[in-house]
Length: 352
Image (cartoon, rainbow, N blue to C red):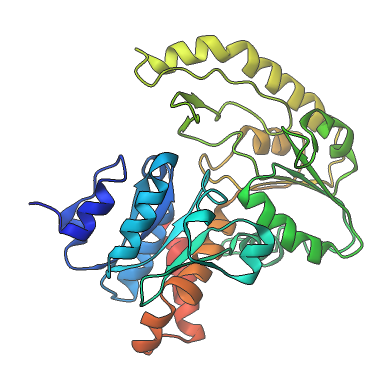
């Protein structure tokens, strides 16, 4: 069965295939990224919440190359069925130039993770990442006996990475830390201190937070169209993974052979640094796939508390659904109340 014209325009912009049977006549939400269809938990979380609330809405992954972002933004504007979308790495900053308006906080953060399509077809950008992180760190989550940390006030935080998610997190952390310090470390000193200085700052921090993509599962595409893997790497040490052509025969085996020495050097440096960091320091990663990154595993096995990105993803997703993308829809259905929000949150945890 052929796709409706508005969905066909979206399909023409992305590399994964949309299933007409699962879409039907439903309204549309989704997630924009390079390859979210291969790893993102968001479709399971959002669709679980929609089923629980008996809403005729579908949440879909949109795998899009950077060059197709303008065309995809236009296709989203033109479809009356589109309510809005989430934005994941690596497009949280790159998508901004294709939007019609930015929320005040998104302007300050200079990154977007949520886009709402208004009734007149305008695309408005928001950012709920930082709020979601604080919720996951400071509030007791389902299945936990206590919060990961009681307070952030007065501690020093080492933040690794300076992309869109890192900017949002840094903005909210700066308010929560009060008299504490925030040290941002990145590969390029334009945005932060250099990556090589992690070893200097990590032993002084009360919390180490990975906002980079080092350790993330799945295939990563480079700007020149090549692909690589970041999952074997720790965020605590430099990494220089090899990028190969997508058509490379036996890609995984050939990539591992070419990158093995670099992986070993990265892991060895990470182990040594983890052992030098005081046990009281918490290890937190925004990544949730895999559930335990190399960074978190090195932290746990060297005696540190560790927290992955599951709680943050769910908290920011619940906020984006309830207060942003589906806000008007829930209001019309008489579902814009605290009990609905709590149900969304609980259902998302159950759908994980």
